[in-house]
Length: 462
Image (cartoon, rainbow, N blue to C red):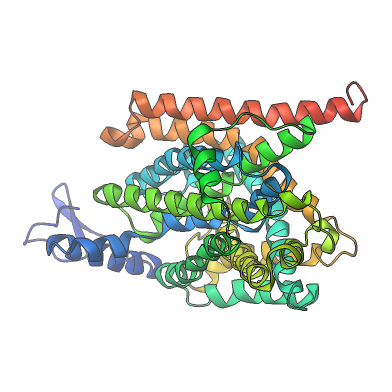
C-alpha cells in the first residue's frame, strides 16, 4: 500500500479536496499486519531461510494433515490386501495431483487475502457459496469421525479406551485454539506433524525387501487380482487420502489468515511442494508396513471392529513396529483433527459473514471457535456408539471425499483462472489443462466405484 503524503496525518486518507479518517484496524487486522511486516523485514534483509521458516505452514499442514488416520489405515489396508505393486507408485501420482490443486489454493489466498468459501460466495452467489460450505461441513464431520477412529485404534493398543480417545481429542482442539493467534496455532500443529515420520520409521523396522520396493516404483505393476469392487474402493480411498475438499478450504483460508501476499507465492509453492513430498514419503511408509501382513493373507487385522493393525503387526513384525505404528495413528488422527476442525471454522465463518480467523477475539470470534470445537465434539460422540464399523468408516470417509471433491476443484479452477480477480497471477493454459485432467480422473474413479457398488446392491452383477 502506498503511504499517504507527508502533509496527510497518519490514520487519514486524502479524498478529493478533503481528508477522510480511515476506519480503525481491528485486533485481527493488527495481528495480521504484524505478521506481514515480519515477513517484509526478513525479505528486505535478505534472510532467505528465516523467510522460508516464516512462510512455511499452510502447505505442509494441508499435506501432512491429509496423511490422516483414515488415509494411513487405507494405505496399510491396501498394502495388506495387495502388497506393494501398483499402489506404491500410485501414491506419488496422487500427491503430485494434490500439489497442483493446493498450489492454486495457496495462490488465490495470497493474491486476494480471502478464503475459498468467502470468494465462492462473492463471485458465484449465495446458493453456490452455501452449497460449497454445506458440502464441506458434511464431509468434514464424516472425516472427523474417522480421525477419532484412528486415535481410538492407536490408543486401544496401549489399553486406553474409546471414552479417553474422545475426551483427549476434543481437549486438544480446545487447548490449541486458546492462544487466539494463527501463528501460535500453526507452530504447535507443525510440531505435532513432524511425528508423521513415524510411519517411515515403522516401514524401516519391518525390514522390507528394498529391491521389491524399488521394482514397484520402477515398473508401476498392473492392477492386481481379487474383488473388482474392493479394488475400486481402495483406488477411490487412495485418491481421497491425498486430495480432499477440506484441504482447499484450509490452505486458501490459512494463507489469507497468515497474511501472505503475492510476493510470497514463490515461498508458498516451496511450502506446498515440500509438504507433498513428505506426505508421499510417509504415506508410502504406511503402505510398506501394511504389506508386511500380505504374506500372512492380510490376516490378523481383527478386533476394534476390524481395524486392529497395531495388534496384527505385533503378531507378525513384533511389538516395536506395532508401538511405532500405533503412535503414528494417534499423531495422524490428532493433526488432521486440528486442521479439519479449522477448515470447518473457516467455512462456517466465511459463509455467514462472521469472523473467520485464529486472530479474531471477543464475541466476533464465537462462531469460528464454536465451529472448531463443535465439529470435533459431534464426531467424538459418534465414535462412542457401541459396535460402530470402524474400518468401514475410515475407508469410506476417503471415498466420500473422492466423490465430492470434483465440485470443489471446479470452483477452485474457476477462481484461479479469473483474470479480473487474479490479474497476472491467474492460471496459465498448462495449469488449467492439468487441473481439468485431475478433475476428470477423480470424477471417473469416484463414479466407477459408486456405479459398481450400486450394481452389486441391486444384484445386476455379483
